[in-house]
Length: 84
Image 1 (cartoon, helix red, strand yellow):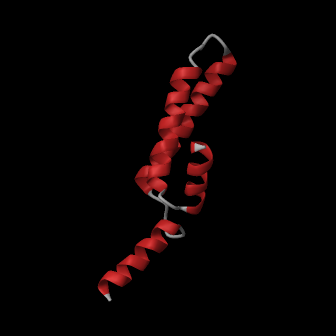
Image 2 (image 1 turned 135 degrees about the vertical axis):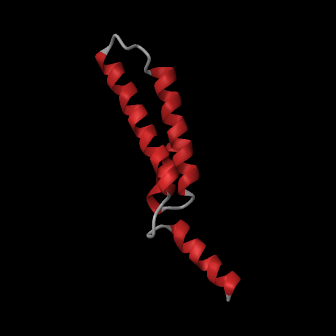
């Protein structure tokens, strides 16, 4: 449920930083809890993949959603309501 909801939130740019944090934390926990058998090449690849995805999610937290996101549209809407 988290993966679907947060994935859609990131795709539409709605609560992007929160969704990216949830997915990043999920990926780190998945790597640490389920992919620790480094003797298996497959497990090592999954561990590295999960950490790479988590790194991308944490970078998205810093960068934000961008200009073409629902977050920005909502922010602009409230800014014009408060000012004018």
